[in-house]
Amino acid sequence: MFDVLIHFHPLLAAAPTCGVLPQAWCDSADLNALVGFIAGWLVGLIGGILAVVILVSAVQIVSSGGSPEAMKSAKNRLTQAAISLGLLISFRAIILLIGL
Image (cartoon, rainbow, N blue to C red):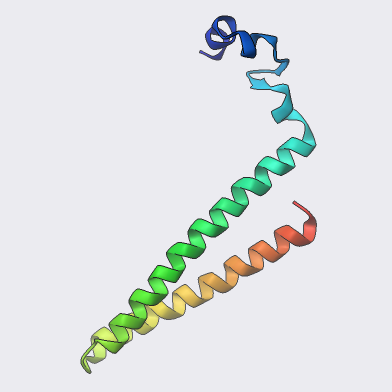
């Protein structure tokens, strides 16, 4: 499939390739930049999801109306989201530490 695109698209035909990928994607510096970019987006996306989960859990705790079942469920979800956020921050710190 990629060979067909390379033959019909003049910019792709002129670009050197390594297999089916452009050569720039095969260089280690560009690969590190790509991995860093993807990791940054994933950390942001997961962090946003965790923030929403924390907010929803907090609202459920406040609006539980004294129901121990609802309170326990919301507290468990809040604890899990807080632990996940801590792990996410640790992941980002490790990625920055190793220089990706």
